[in-house]
Amino acid sequence: MDRKTRLAAFIEAVWNLGDAAAVPTYLASAYTIHHDPGDPWEGRTLDPAGFGERLIQSRAPFPDQRFNVLRMAQDDDAVIMTWTWEATHLGDFPGFPATGKVIRMSGATAYGFDDQDRLTGHWQIADRLGVFQQLQANRG
Amino acid sequence: MDRKTRLAAFIEAVWNLGDAAAVPTYLASAYTIHHDPGDPWEGRTLDPAGFGERLIQSRAPFPDQRFNVLRMAQDDDAVIMTWTWEATHLGDFPGFPATGKVIRMSGATAYGFDDQDRLTGHWQIADRLGVFQQLQANRG
Image (tube, rainbow over all chains, first blue to last red; front, side, top):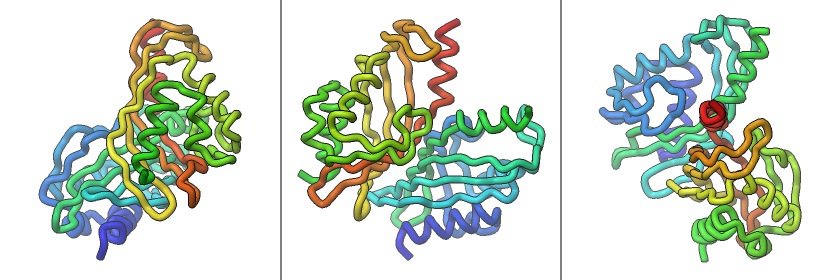
């Protein structure tokens, strides 16, 4: 499987379906969140178990979340992916109780790989202001 | 010149140095801003002259702005670039008068190319919330 195919499978199994048991299939033993403004784990290096905890906590307010991959491009040691995201706000989020309304986001992520094509970390940007404005509007 | 080299030259001449006369060297006759939340030109298709106006208006509050390219990756018809940006807030921005303070931003952009390696448009995400928080804090 090439890196783009592996990355698409990781996004589907782990982030879209929430399967924490699939994490060790895709992750290196150390995964670093290099840059991800607003992510509580930004700057940390996680092992697959720690990543699984991040997955479960991140998905709790948005259990039906889906990333839609728009484009992937590869260089020597990374794949950069642009995406949109959609989720129903079903669980509480700091400062924003659940509303049952749909939230949309767009972003881009550069994923690093090791020589066994396992994920070593990411650098991510998302339109947090767009999300914040939707959460505010939904709170009424 | 390959596409990554051309894109780096475009960023330097046009966005960093603000040379509107260099726009026709790099742009196709029609340039579409497919996705760029918060950009007043989002959704529009510009010719090189219109792009030059956008350049001048965009740079006015931040005349010393610099994009620092972190990574570029290429697929069949696009180059995706991750970047950081830094500028001194020297001109008025809607709702935020000039403060002379440095603003920092990070983002990612997918640039489309035609078969003559000219830029046909972009899809962009930036951390607008981070910029907004800095502008708010600087306003005091």
